[in-house]
Length: 361
Image (cartoon, one colour):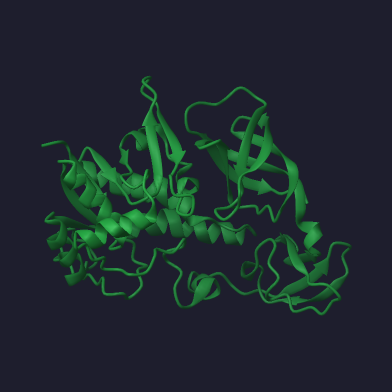
């Protein structure tokens, strides 16, 4: 029998199949279903009480997964850590007039942070997830991170902030597979996911949407002016947190051509708008960089992804200070958004990533 591996079980087909494949390889497998406190009412209900008792009897959906895989599944209460590390970050970023990406925080802080620590406490050597990414050691004790083989499901962008120690303790059984093959394996082996929906990029935003969630988190809707770049006031917004760079919807100011959000001026509570062409920029500043292997020799030539649904674009990275670079794109990019992650690629490999702080518009 190989080493004990914990699998972060969400209830979806990906984590279910990942656990199945590890068992097929001969590993001893244990599931961990972690609770954030922001789950949607989808059949996963737990009575954790105020203490967050990890021995709480699992709901029927978790029991169904446990029986299908013939593995025990632990319920782990992450409510406190998730609120402190993810929700607080989400709220503060919006208050700063930036657009957050909570998955970039959740993965290193929660899944491969708090949950991994719990997995080790119960005897697991590593933790596996259903992410479509790949890792590979280089013989020098270092882990390299690569895109998943399925380009439509590749999730390497969301794991760019993992440390070397976290990558060494991580396992990604689906990295070399296509989503269609994962579904076939599940169907062939009678694996029925408890959750039929694909996981959302932001798992804690539900029916109320971003505006409703932020309102519940105590962010006030403070109205202010909508202005063109030249300072001409053309309307009034109902709260800067309702907008992000590049957005058209909600501006509601008549013009010959649609307005797009260019900037959120939190100091003056002003929404700065302009044309789509005004969103083009060749340069941005990225800080708090996590280099996967080691800091490279500068300047760095790389392909840079500025959000999850963005095709990596050729760019040169110029150092400004420790963990802070200026990115010069070969061609101007649309809607470079402060608060989002910029992830650096060399072909299929992820070499690092950091936070966009200035889009140089």
